[in-house]
Length: 221
Image (cartoon, rainbow, N blue to C red):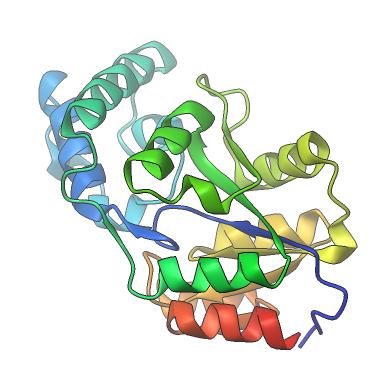
């Protein structure tokens, strides 16, 4: 287990790590599929896809062309914006935990597959934005959408050193993306990722509740 001594920066995933947005996301995906007359049963259980880039969901899981996938994404985003965070809640312990991390002098950032402007709006709407020094998300198009590229973008955009940074997330892509960029990783087991998925990814640390996240980060491992 990697120690967290010398930790200065914490990169957090958003959906499934700080907020439970499952209902909002599912409703928006189903809306997009309905608008394109696509049967949700033609793909896997949508719940298992939460956390994947939308482009990969519609192309890889529903077999859409790039053009049709972009149309689906447009429908998704329009509906998601109309919901205005209805059905999304902040996980227990997150507000207090983020405040403790801020108070300890750690620099907090978001690294999410949500496009940056959308992630910014979610944070503002849920009154979490004040805790973060910066937000790094996917591009609005499919160019920057995988977690490894998003983490690399965050490191570059905010001038962060990988050796003094950790990535906290709920899916294997968070752990693997951290490793690819030289960061330590922490997997949270209360989000959208299955425990077996996270164990296979072999994170440096794991947490069953957000209070465990803040405790581990503040205690150095």
